[in-house]
Length: 39
Image (cartoon, rainbow, N blue to C red; front, side, top):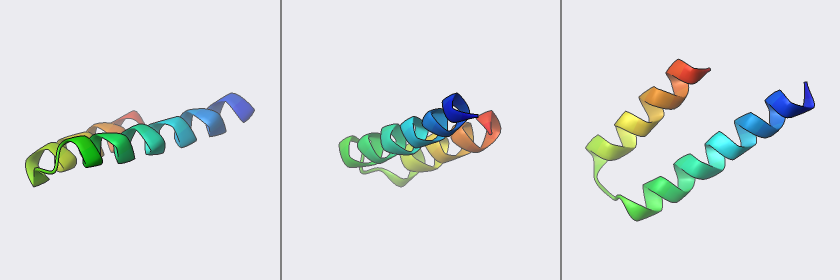
């Protein structure tokens, strides 16, 4: 359970970093969709 929680935190953090690096909406939406699928 703890590993699952840490995975969610890491995914959210990674998404935030990518959003800062790639300020294109298309890239942000792709990452968001990928994370939703992994959930």
